[in-house]
Image 1 (cartoon, rainbow, N blue to C red):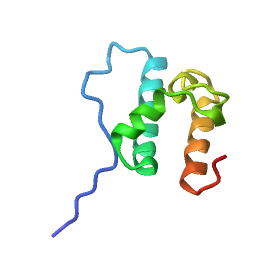
Image 2 (image 1 turned 180 degrees about the vertical axis):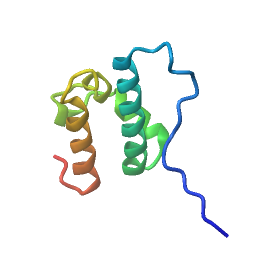
Image 3 (image 1 turned 30 degrees about the vertical axis):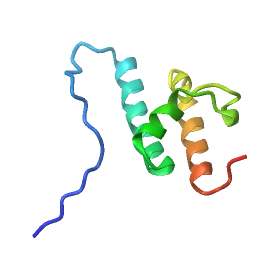
Length: 88
């Protein structure tokens, strides 16, 4: 019997009328939500973390940073530091 694994969330709405900038934002947000859920334990904790000010991000919320070109990597790096215990 083959194993089934979930690779990520899918978008429930059609993306045809969304701008490419918004589609990139939404996909990055979903990727970070998956990683934050894994790191922080529950989806509720992850969703709260994504909209809360984070000290390591100069008290900016992770979702606000996703609109900037380097924001995704900044947020991902903070999540990785939390996961590996390097967070200050």
